Structure formats: structure tokens, C-alpha cells
Length: 340
Length: 264
Image (cartoon, rainbow over all chains, first blue to last red; front, side, top):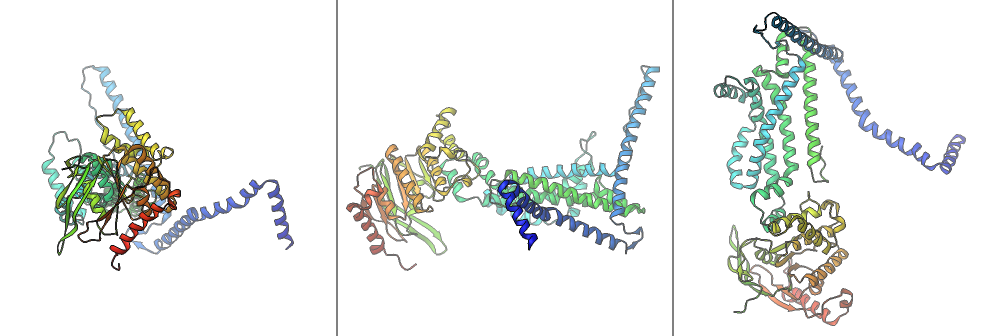
């Protein structure tokens, strides 16, 4: 009792002297703690629990490749994969240095000598594969968006086009990437014949497969967004006698931007999943190939390395989604919409 | 044949339904002079909006037609600007940009950039909205949105201003403010206005003539009431005015005696 009243009094005193400081002392830390408890501590606690369960379960499972790796093993392999990459880069730099020296020496002896410049053909590291995959998925996704958004707009504006396209969209949408892959592979081999190809065939096959699989959500969402424009806004365009392009550019497109971006986000997510599967099946460079190679390799580290890949695939997918979410928030004019 | 500024002659319209055509309007005749302020009043579902949409060119009459300055109306256009009931501002554009869209479209050949800018600001001033010119529709109140909607319509310099229950969604005080603004604008610019309303006081206060419509189906013009009240009108003075009360009673009698709505 005495203690309580003492605190109360001392607080009252402080309040009389510096009310601001009191506010800081009481209110803000409370809010602070409350906020951080929700936003930081809970996810961290969940993560720690997950790690605990994982390592507990892993220690119980014995596989043909040794014990199922726990978090520690996976972390070790993450470091080792990174070190491999750094070592490989050093080797490459040294290779080119040696080549330059050799050629310079040759030219010194005989200025007319033909020098050979070879490019380095070392091992493809995990990090290389990661960037290949990222590059491929972004290319495929961009092409898909460039095709899907215009189609979506036209099918949203015209009932006839919508009726014509809808069955095709509904049939192609659920097709697994694994079914597209052989067709795409064969068509690319047949059609893309060039002495000096700008893209490698494997890249084209992966990217086109991504395109084919991730077009659909964007088409469907764009079309819904366009067809659900407020009738009054279209009437405004009629009263103003806007031309078709002006109408699309000034009214239809901005009005359906939130839906278009929702579609793009779905598309990119699908594209990323599809790409990994396609790379595994077609042995095209990328994270999918890495996983498959490690699976075939079957060393004692393979399982841990595959798990590293799984996490990286997940993290990249998450990152891509955040980027799209950020873009979606940037372009959305609807302040009431909750985008998450 | 004497030609009015705006003529609706023998306008009938049928809407297709599953049970065959539904006649919404039957033989609507109406002559409107330049600078006149006309209100359309009637029970909901009587086809007031349909009349307005035909004049706007959104619908085409099945038979009969509309002449504006002796030219047939058959598509929408900026010479018949519409103020929509729910403002219909483009939500991603600011007040200024919303008016700008209309000005750029209507005056792209005749005005320079500077002139356009002045014209946009002038119209925002008319509705007392210059202070919120850079605000998005979501950031301003319902009454302010409707003001910007009116500015956008006025900026098209329409021959006829069509207003579809422009103040229907507003609270009573805001509505009164906007009615005063509208009277002020009408006094200054002398626009020809057709306004749909449910509000008897609003109709009497603002109009030169009130067109009272019969109930649908096959709705038509029931009676036309001339409002012979001095302008400028003041709502407070008119509140006790005998003529005003009389006109008000006339409209009410039409709506609730002669055109009594069947139990809804």
C-alpha cells in the first residue's frame, strides 16, 4: 500500500514538473512493447518452435543418405555453398589472369601470333543457379504480362471476345507445367534454329513454360477488373466522347489497375513454382537443376543442400511477392482496400 | 411550327424483357426553352431517369425523338453534360484533374494550355472548390464531390445541363448549400437545366417549371406546373411565402392523391 502510494505520488510529482517525460515514460514504451510483441516476437517464437520441431523430428529419421539434416547441418551447407561460389569466382579470375599473361608473352615473342581467348568453363555454383532462375522467371513473367494484360482488357471490354476466349482460358489454365514442357521443348528445338543464338535453348524452354503457365491469372483478373468498372465512369467517357484508346488509357486501365496487379502477383507466384519444376524435369540450368543434381549425386551433404535450395526457393518466392505487393500498394488508388 | 430550344416529341421507349417489350415511357412531349430550369418529379420507377438518359443520348427512344436546337440527339455528347447521382468522379484523379479530363477533351482544339488551366480554375471557383483542387475524391466529403462533379459538367459548357438526382445522397444541410450554389450559378451563367429530384421543396425552390410524371409502366408527363416566383429566391423568405406553399401543396397533391403509389 505504502509502496503504491509512493509510486503514485512520485508520478504525480513528475507529471507536474515534466508532463511530456511522464507520457514518454508510461505510454510509449507500453505501446512499443505491445506492438513489437505482435510484430516481432510472435513470428520469432514461431520460427524457433519450428526449428525445434524440425531438429527433433530430423534426429529420429535415418535415410539412405544418413540422418535427416537438422537446422545446424543445413546452415553449415549454406555457408559451404557460399564458400564454393566465392572459391569458384577466384578460380575464374585467376584463369583469366593466366590467360592474359600467356597471351601477352606470346605477343611479345611474335607480334603476329594468333592468341586464343577461351572463356572459363568452371562449375556452375548454387548462387549462379539462383540468378539464372531469377532471370528466367522474370523474363517469362514479363512476356506473360505483356500478352495477358492486353488480352484481359479486350476480353473485359467485349462480351464477344470474352465468350470466345473463356473456354480456351478455362481449359489451358489448369494444365500442369510438366505437360507443356515436352511440347515447348520440341517446338523450340524445331523453330529456334540460329547459328548465333541470342538466348540458349534451355533458357527459352524454361521461360516459355513459365509464360504459358502464368498468363492465366493475369488474363482472368484483368478481364474481371475491366468488366466490373463502374457503369457511371463509362457513362462519363460516353458523355465526353472519348475515343477507344483514350477511354482505355484514361478510364479503363487506371480503374482496373488494382485487379491487374492482384493478377500479376498470383501469376508471378505460379511462375516461380512452375520454373523450379520445369528446371528439374528438363535439366535446364537453375535452382531446379541444382536440386535434381544433388538428388542424383546422393552424397552425405546432398539432403542438406537440397534443403538449402528449398529455403532459398521459398525466400525468393517470398521476396518476389513482396516486390509485387509493394508495387500493388503504390499503384492502388483505392485507399480503403486492404492489400495483404 | 414553333421550335423550342429542346424538344421531346412523342417519345416512347420499350425495354426488351423475357415477356416481350416493356413500355417504360409512352408519348412524352416536352418543350424546354433556353435558360429554363426544369425539374422532373415523380415516384421512383416512373421513368424520370429514362427521360434524362434519352436526352443525354444514353438510350434511344423507340419512337419519337429529341431535338436540341433542331438537331436530333442520338448519342451522348458534352453539349448535354450529365451530373450523376453518385458524382462519378474518377477516384484516381484529383478534383483538378477530373475537371481537366473534361476540358482537355472538349476544348483540345480551341484552347491553349494556359487558357485551359484558367478555365478549369474558373469552374472550380464557381462551385467553391479551389481549396481542394489537389485532393482525391476519397479525401473530400460527399457534398464536395458533387460540387466537383458539377464543375466538371459546367466546364464542358453544355447547352443543357442534365442532373440526375444530384443531391439525393447528401444530408439536408449540405443539400441546402448546394442548392444555393446551383441557384447562384444558374443566375450567373443562365444554363438550361433539367434536374431529376424526389424532393418537393427542392423542385419548387429551384425550378421555373416542374414536370410531374405519372406512374409507370407507360409513364408520361402528367402535369406541368409553372413556378412564378421572383428570382433571386431565398429559402428563408420563401418558407412563409403563400405562393411557395401553394406550389408545394400542388406538387404534393399530384404525387400523393392523383398518382398515389400502389403499396410498394
